[in-house]
Length: 134
Image (cartoon, rainbow, N blue to C red; front, side):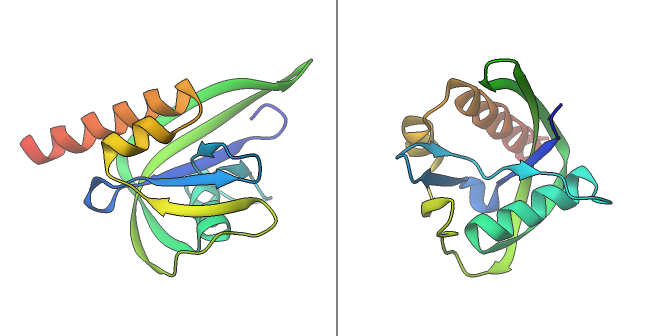
């Protein structure tokens, strides 16, 4: 983010992304701000753990940036990654998230709130399919 940077990971175990439903009934991917000394990947793994309870490992080959404006005069960049779930127990962070779910790709596409998230998911799916077929 330009004020400050946000990072996220799209967990990809069995090509099932994690979708979040926030307190406002929007479905989106985990994301958040960078803490001092963190790399983009470390931020993504921490945010996924905090918001979903899942431990993840960021996979190489996918790094996408989206830019949005949450308020007038504020522009933020969010960096997304594909990650594999390596442990943890799925649970929602009560302060920010109403529910956490792992969905088949098609259902995730339908439930995601933002067009930018749907585009990210499509790119991630293509990367995963290319790896399997390559």
